[in-house]
Length: 103
Image (cartoon, rainbow, N blue to C red):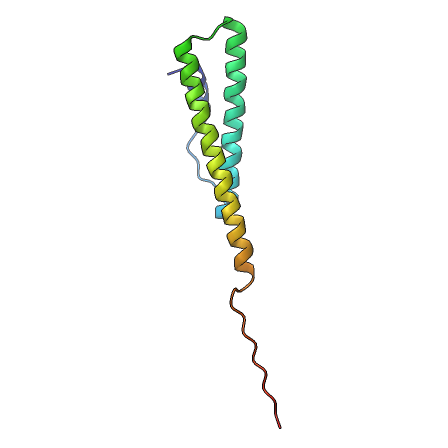
């Protein structure tokens, strides 16, 4: 296990995300964005202290970074879809109008 993973796993605890599904998705999206930022900072710090990252370690970090980045992209798309669905549900799609005259 890398030093980065040890630091993250020792600081994180399992938790439930409160709120509506859309709020939960935003919370998860923000969590992954923070994680990507931390990973980038860790890689930068490791590179500056060691001068050169071991190719295997760098490749592993890059793979994890790319995986997390893809998850963030997928989550953004899902949140966008949920927002669109929520907007559509505010207005009924089938509206009928009936007018009757009283004589």
